[in-house]
Image (cartoon, rainbow, N blue to C red; front, side, top):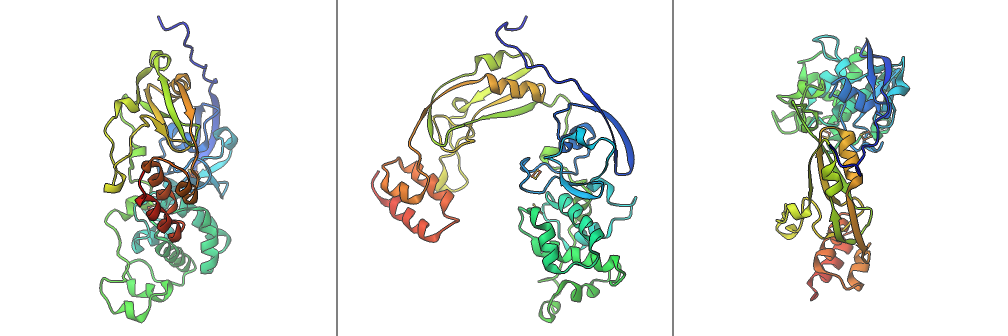
Length: 359
Ligand code: FES
Ligand code: FES
C-alpha cells in the first residue's frame, strides 16, 4: 500500500506514430510529449543522434526532416507523422560511406565524435543545395553546430574535400597527395611526413557512422533514470531539505542530497571546493541540490517535484567589481572570478588583487 499523500501525475496515453526513418517505414507508440530526439534515441535505439544541450543551442541533435536540417531536441516526435527523417545511421549506402563520412574519417575531422553526426547532416543538406560552397559559406552553414573539441579547421577541410569528390574533381580515397591543394596546405607543411598532415583516426569510421557509444548511449538491463533537482536561486542558503515524500513514491530507488557527499573535490588545487550536490549554499541558478534514481523518467521527475527545499536567499555577486566591494566569503569571490577570467584579463587582475585581501 503506497503513501496516500503521494500520487504520481498520470502519464499521457501513448500516441501512434508512423514515419520514414532512413528509408524504412516505422510504426511505433510514443509518449506524445517526447521530442524527436527522444523518440529516435529511446524508442528506436538510434543513438547516433546525440543529446547535447536539449535547448536548441548546440546543434548536436541535428537530423534531416524531409531533407531539411532541424534540431531534433526542439521538435515533437508526433509532429513528424508521415515525414522522412535521416539520421547519421542512414548516411552510408550499405558498407559504402557517404563522401562526407569518408572525408571526415580520412582527415581526422571527428575528434571525440560527439558533434560529428549533427555536423555531417548539416553539411549534407548544404552540399545538396550548394555543391561548391566557398569556405565562408561552409562556416556559416555549420555555425549552429558547436564542436566542444574546437577542431573546426579539419571539419571545414573535410566538407571541402567531400564536395570536390562529389563534383568529380578530386581523387578517390587513398590518394592523399591530391588532397593538399583542396585543403589549402602549404608547401612547407607538405614537406613533413607527420606534422601538419591529416591522420585518419583508428576509430574514425565508428565516429562518422554513429556507432561509437558514449555514456549517454548505453542501455543496460534494469537501468534506472536519474534526475537532478536544481536551485531556482542564484545565491541562497539551504535551510532544510525534506525528501521523505519523494523517497516514498513507488518506483523511487534512492534520493540523495549534499549531506550524502560531504567530501569536496576539484580538478585544480585552487578549486577543491566543489560538491557533487550542494551541501549548504547554492551559487547559481541550476546548482544541483538533490538527485533521484527511479524506475522511469516520469517517476524520477515526479519525485524531484516532491522534494521540499527551504532556501534563504543571499546577496548576489554578479561581477568581479561587486566581489571587490562586497564583503563575502573568499570561496564566493573565487567562484565569481572563475566565471569571469575567460572574459577579461583585467578582471582577472582585479580578482587576484581581491583574493589577496584578508577575508
Ligand atoms: S541538443 Fe539539440 S541543440 Fe543541443
Ligand atoms: S569532435 Fe568532439 S565535440 Fe566535436
